[in-house]
Amino acid sequence: MNQTRQSSAPPATVSARIAPAAGLDVLSRREVARLRDASAGGLHQLLRSCALAVLTQGLITDDPRAAVELYADFEIEVLQQDRGVQLELTHAPAHAFVDGKIIRGINELLFAVVRDIVYIATQLEGGSFDLETSEGITHAVFDILRNARVLRPNVDPNLVVCWGGHSISRNEYDYTKLVGYQLGLRDVDICTGCGPGAMKGPMKGATIAHAKQRRRKNRYIGITEPGIIAAESPNPIVNNLVIMPDIEKRLEAFVRTAHAIIVFPGGVGTAEEILYLLGILLNPVNIDVPYPLIFTGPRESVAYFEQIDRFLRLALGDEVARFYQIIVDDPTQVARQAAKGVERVRKYRLDNSDAFFFNWSIRIDEALQHPFHPTHAAMAGLNLHREQPQHLFAADLRRAFSGIVAGNVKIEGMRAIEQHGPFLIRGDAAIMQALDELLASFVAQQRLKLPGGASYVPCYRVMRD
Image 1: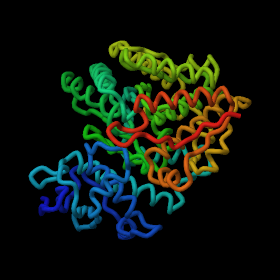
Image 2: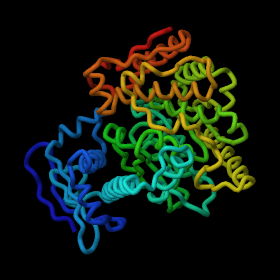
Image 3: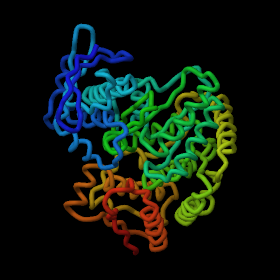
Image 4: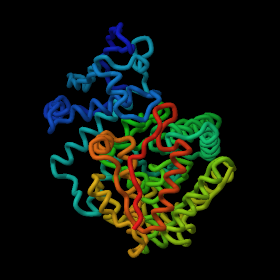
């Protein structure tokens, strides 16, 4: 039972001690100590920021500093009781509670945060993760997902990952719900980046369809990472949250768990995701691996996908278009094509004795696996020229977009821009011109930041060789 006291100071806050609604393994004294430790070697600040992101569901902002400033007095402490782990919350956002009791879904996500932070730190400290080799990184991704109970054996392929932006129009958002509804009618589970916009809509649509189908064990998986979660708090439909250590492992988790991927309109983060996947599919070793990829949106988004298609063809060659199909304003057809693609994946996995729940057969080059730290020097040093294998060029283009994401919504990136000015992105003249035009269209369509705040100031400058 929660013991609460209501704060009178705005914004409204609640202090409470909560036990896990869904159960959590006990923690060792060392793990609890590290979660309390606010030093550079401790995990407390990471726990606090991720927990606050979960507690501020519905806060309309993509500035990771907003929640921290609004709830500056918020604190969280991990307690190891005889009956298991409890969390002591002080000055937590009141809207996470109903009549003094924390909302069950928020409770579950909070303890998922504790689980993942502790597990990853323990494995890294114990040397259990080999993050120097491609195979070691893939096994680390597998272990984190398994620990989070995302991987389900003896279940036919049915997981569709949906990518898309957090800042999209109302028509685009409603369309993502319609697609999610059609997917749900076909017994599909949904995985997204867990935030708002195109990450919430498909889950919302699928919940209605799943209810109509009287489907009980539904999965709405949200995969995030510490640099993103503060700017894109988990939406309330997510019932299985996973926090990966960095963006590269997050992207690999998407690719290896998905049986098909649907891409809705978005901004630079969505472009990063597209380039990541195409960088994998363009690798000649993956030529025979089926991987359904669908771009879709309402009729108003036709120009968006035409521009994405032109940019991809210019940068990576016309043959890149064979890896994806574009379906406009037809949610039913999207769901049907996704279901057909999933069936192809099922047959391929059976023929190749590959697991349904984790795609071991697809090869991911180390260039896409090792973390990219978007400093000014690293961004200026990207090889954005076409005189290299296509999949490696796609990998560097992905890093360019990743740096812009960091400059827009990640605290470290935002601070670097404030101190040193915009990132300089230099490369092939034709590609840079197309990139500049693509980014300008994202800005004009308000896809880089949520509308309503100050005018967007680009965190980048595109230079042409």
